[in-house]
Image 1: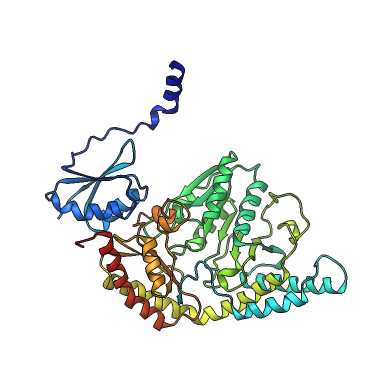
Image 2: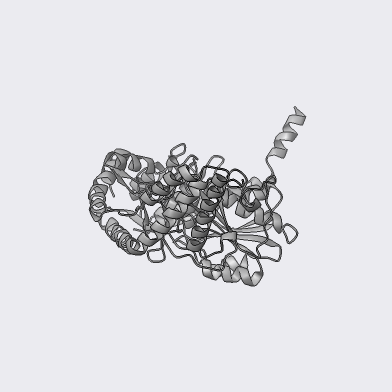
Length: 99
Length: 378
């Protein structure tokens, strides 16, 4: 048992632990985990209107394409891409509604 | 069916078909032997080499036929890296090279070499100064495509070649997308190209190793193709490739500007016809026949299938259409939308009517797919 636990610890090196996220807290989080692009982007576009202007919406996704597509969508739609937060599975993309 | 995927492969040029059939009959013998039929085959191979060399502005003894563009890339890179091993094991590539270049770089890295990847701007273009800054005293080779295969942006080969010359680093240029279509800048040391991209037959690539460029075969010794490329020479293929290159280059001189005007039309009209679309790549410094755009909220594969149903053959860099789950590394490096991606590349002789028909059906196709995907507002 002890041996197994030590091995498990070695397999998760410290530098792989993502830095904790300290930015503004999203007031709405959408779960698009397990969904392929463009679904996470569609969900973001459909629901960003639910947060007031100036507030943050987060979309959680584990399709690697979202890492490119969310910031690119923000650029195209003039929304404010705030941060990419690493989750145990996938990422949470934080977007501030600008209009 | 309107074929708009010339960047994948150009339909066989009639000049290539004629040359291929003639050389299958007259050039089948072993060009290394000494009897009459063999000497005829050798003569044809020499001819093909000389004509191809002229088209690339190099000498025949710098020109070698390979079995594909990919093989030419592998041999150019691995041969140059091997020959300069004592200088160092550092390799510089751009982030938007063809996968054959990046896979060779990955192999080099697994083999203990070092790789620096130079990024691109939003149009997919390398900054020559950033590329120059990546060169080091232990850099064995630098690689830059002449033009990008997914978005058509031309790379600053002349400026990068100058920087490489100053740093005494050989530059390998992957010219697969531009050969026969766009005049090639000079100053490079090695080059790879692929005949089926200019209307030649499949299974023929071109490797050019300039004089005074150090190169050592990474493969077991073989006496064929000046000891550069192993295996029995494809004489009919080489003849067909050379004939197609001559014919294609001459035609593109006239037809290139017309295709480029059609591409301008697509670039200009698509954003008016379709909402939430981004035309990507450099609008001016680009290949004459290629344009790429991304439609928000649409799956690339679904759009390709829909356009196929409507009679248009196009390609996409979106992840679901590739053989991997990752989106295109080119679109990623550019920081542009990776889904809903469509690449239109016009073969020779594309009619304006076909382009108009494409622009007429595209908005409906995108709108249908967006509705299906559940987009209610836009």
